[in-house]
Amino acid sequence: MRTFTSAQSGAGGPNLRDVTTPDAQWAGRVRALAAERDAVILAHNYQVPEIQDVAHHVGDSLALSRIAASVPQSTIVFCGVHFMAETAKILSYDKTVIIPDERAGCSLADTITADQLRAWKAEHPGAVVVSYVNTTAAVKAETDICCTSSIAVDVVASVPHDREILFCPDQFLGAHVQRVTGRDKMHIWMGECHVHAGINGADLKAMVAAEPDAELFVHPECGCATSAMYLASEGVVPKERTRILSTGGMLDAARETKARKVLVATETGMLHQLRKVNVTTDFQPVNRAAVCKYMKMITPEKLENALRTGDDVVDVPCDIADRARASVERMIAIGTPSRVGE
Ligand code: 13P
Ligand code: SF4
Image (cartoon, rainbow, N blue to C red):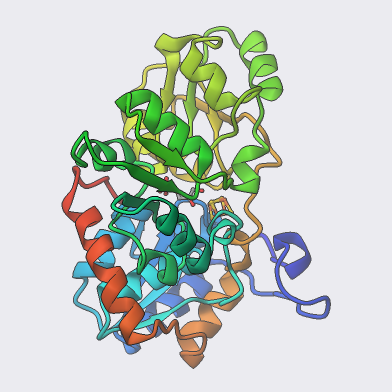
């Protein structure tokens, strides 16, 4: 069994060592503590494998939002990043939401503040604001409708054609949505996720050349111009074998593929679920270094500790939550639910 240290996960201060062995005893303790606390454990597809395996539900950000809105337990322990836990709080305001390390942020969410969005709106009066769910609660409060990568196209398509759209904060997802919907009155914020922007076209081209029969699963946050996203959508890499998918969409595609090999352009935590749902296909990352240090701040020891202490409660001021809820609920109402692992 692996032993985690904070140095491996990239989390915590220099003296903080996580020496928990995430074995069957650990999993038993975690599930027992969750039952005592009347807690449900939700884990994003990018969490470390042991946390995905112990969670009650694993999924993409849309699926986890839907679950957070409907679970019967009084406490939600969110193993993901801060904006995801905030979204759970917004949707289930009467519940206690805990994140095992409140420092687990998101470089993409950090690329736009509520002040910046207000200023942008003032430049485009009457525009409809579509924000990716990777935003703070304060940004969601300034938003008309949120989206995740799995339903961004449906959300933009739901806006009447004559309306101007402000899409934030991910420029690559925005460019993808604009290409698919053909919207012209759409302004895109120039934010990016450092992990996905780092999955570039050079890596992808080299891997496709070495594996000419492989399928490609590409997350729409991946970088542009010389990048995976651009090459895939422009057909520079084989279009018929290239799928642009959310993490939940990748899982659905993995269940169905007959390919011998699939190259996966997203955060490497995704490989665990893909390999679980399809044991015959060989799933390989396009970039092994595509690791989100924020997602990996949630360690087995911190999860157990959070269940024991109930610390690191996520709070969203009531007025912000009320304003943000409408935009998140509009998102939840659109599109088909993505599947989750139990
Ligand atoms: P998904 O909505 O595909 O789960 O993506 C969330 C995310 O943070 C991607 O980096
Ligand atoms: Fe944010 Fe990127 Fe990490 Fe996703 S992978 S949580 S977008 S920093």
